[in-house]
Image (tube, rainbow, N blue to C red):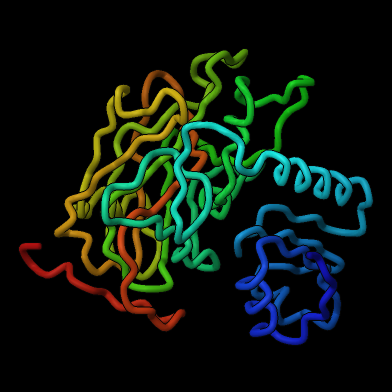
Length: 302
């Protein structure tokens, strides 16, 4: 049942996010503290949260855009629970592109979205938070990748690289995790009018670095030994969900407080790489104090 609440503090707002599936926020002068924490610099600004994550933002009093957001929420509510090959976790309900390994859960809700960082991304498309959206990617909503049944372009809920095929994603966690698997979803359009070099493609080589205090620069990452390097093959991508299930060397991912994911190259001639979703599969550990990221492990010989 929906209701209106006056947000009195950041803790009150966090309580609302924890107890509500969908929260629509109209930031005013009274909510400046909360607004600043989400990067809001101008008022009014409307944000829609679903399962604690931002899914839409409207700057200014724009009735048309607000109406579009409401219609989209209604459409998503109608489609919740519809068929498809996606799996769900009882602990963290939401879309998954592959089944869970026995004994492990979707722990993507432990991503500290306020600390995310993404380098070399196309700013006209989605941002880092988009990758951890729990909803089904819009490209899978029907048999057509980026348009709806009326030929209109879908909501932009994916990320593409900008100047070349490389992407650098920094993922801090709210607790120390044991990470077993990554699920990476990439849904480039199958039939694109773009020239070969302009059409987005799937990532091929991914380097992972654990327990870094901040995002790495591209040159810095190339000089470091990765915790693990993954070379994805075409057969690794599920034909129905566009998801690759990446099993990690579990012994190296036992006490993980952050991950850096570096896509260094991609398939084919494309110079842009596309990622729609990233899911973290594993086990939750102890909660850490946000804002203090300690380096764990990375000892000589590890």
